[in-house]
Amino acid sequence: MSTPHKAGFVNIFGAPNAGKSTLLNALLGEYLVITSPKVQTTRHRILGILTEPGYQIVFSDTPGIIEPKYALHRKMMMQVKSALEDADVAVLMHDITQPMEEIEHIDAELKLKVPVVLLLNKADLIKDTAELQRIKDAFQQRFPNYLVETISAAGKKNLEKIIPFILEHLPEAPPFYPEDSMSDRSTRFFVSELIREQIYHLFKEEIPYHAAVLIRSYEEKTTLDVIKADIIVTRETQKVILIGKGGTLIKKLGIEARKKIEEFVGRKVHLELFVKVRPKWRDTDTYLSEYGYN
Ligand SMILES: Nc1nc2c(ncn2[C@@H]2O[C@H](COP(=O)(O)OP(=O)(O)OP(=O)(O)O)[C@@H](O)[C@H]2O)c(=O)[nH]1
Image (cartoon, rainbow, N blue to C red):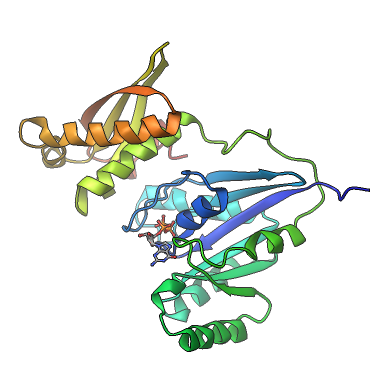
C-alpha cells in the first residue's frame, strides 16, 4: 500500500533581514521572492508551493515583524496575523549574528501552537565550529520544544532536515493547488516585484521605501509581452532622482528590470516605465488598495 498524500500550510516568521525570502527561494528552487540587503522588502504575503510526489507544502513568507508606523505597516501586520491562523507548522528564522532577545520577542508575540522549527540562519558567518555548537545548544536550551538547526539559506547548507520535519507534522490531505502552480500570485505581481527589486539595487535609502510599482497593462503579443508600469513616489524630488539626468537612470532601471522579467516569463519583453507622484500613498487606504497592498 502506498503512503497517503500529505498537504498543508507552513508559515515563515522572523525579524526583517533574517533571510526568510532567501530560505523560501532555496527550498522552492525558483526565483520566487525578492531578496535585498535592505529591510522591509517583503510587503506582501507570498505563497510559494512545493509540490512533490506524495506531498504539497504551501509556504507563506510574511512581512518582517515591525511596529506599525504607517497604514502600510498596519496592513503588513494584519497579514502576519492572518498567516497565523491557518498554519500546520511554523518556521522561525533568526539571524545567528543577532542577539537571542530578538527571536525571543517574536516568539513571545506569536504564541505559536503548532510544531516549530527554529532556524539559526547565516551560520556561515560563524567560522568557529565549537562556537557554532555552543550557540546552537544555548538556543536549544532556551527553546526545548522546538527543533533547532543552524543553517545557511544563502549557501543552501544544512537545509535537509527542514522538509522531513514539516512532513512529519503535515496532515493527510489531497493537494490544495494544481501541480504546476508555483504561487497563487499572478505574473503581474512578480513583474512588479522584479521592477521594485531593481529600484532597490539602483537607489539609496529614501527612494525604495517611498516607491511602489503598479502594472498598468500587460499584453501578451505573439512575439513578446508588452508591459506598462507606474512607479509611484511620494515627492517631486524623488521623481527627479528616479528619472536621472536626461532620463539616464530610469532607462537603466528599465533595461535591468526588463532582463529580469524576460528571464522570469521566458519571453521577450517590451517594458515602459512611468514615474508618478502621489504624496500620501503610504498612508491612504484607497491608494493602498489600488496598488494591491490589501
Ligand atoms: N551570510 C549570509 N547571508 C544571508 C544568508 N541568508 C540570507 N542572507 C542575506 O540576508 C539578507 C536578507 O535576506 P532576505 O531573505 O531578504 O531576508 P528576509 O527575512 O526575507 O527579509 P525581509 O524581506 O526584510 O523580511 C540578504 O542580503 C541575504 O543575502 C545566509 O545564509 N548567510
